[in-house]
Length: 72
Figure 1 (cartoon, rainbow, N blue to C red):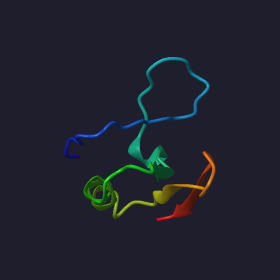
Figure 2 (figure 1 turned 30 degrees about the vertical axis):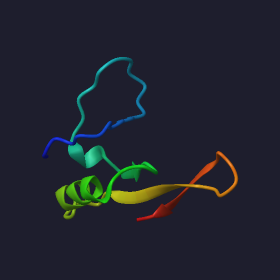
Figure 3 (figure 1 turned 30 degrees about the horizontal axis):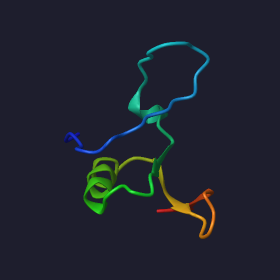
């Protein structure tokens, strides 16, 4: 995958502490942040286009600091 110039966060829920290796098929969903650029999203969408990964776009709820998401 091409390197991205923005900050990326990856979170995987597991019962093991520390760094873990995992198979890419274990990835179920990607949530795009509210400030992530379209170019970076397109890179990720293209990379996973033949996978079963679900994509979601995070959005601010107007007038609050709360976040919601919608299917991308």
